[in-house]
Image (cartoon, rainbow, N blue to C red; front, top):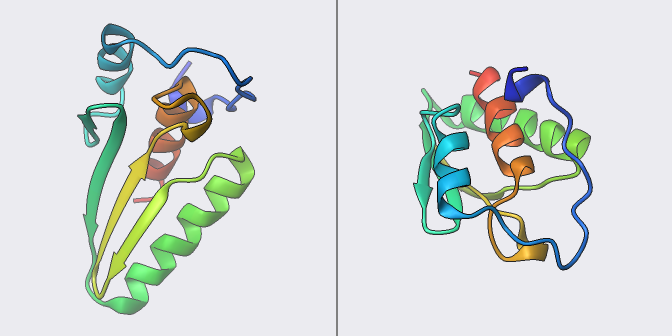
Length: 106
């Protein structure tokens, strides 16, 4: 099943984050995203501020639906997203699911 078709699952405190090998395997399924230490990151560029904010609002909707929220940095026509599961101090499958759903927005 494609990651974008999956639904994130609640992560219990104490759940270990994905190990590097597991994260690298899942990262191949969202190739646009960069695996940086214990997080996923990506930059997006748009024509203008209006397009930027439309994208951010769609990302916010995905995040609410998945109950998994990226860190978002916004400038005029650029957005930097960072995904990590803060409650476990690293990456979970949910990060990759949200990344795949964000990719579908483009």
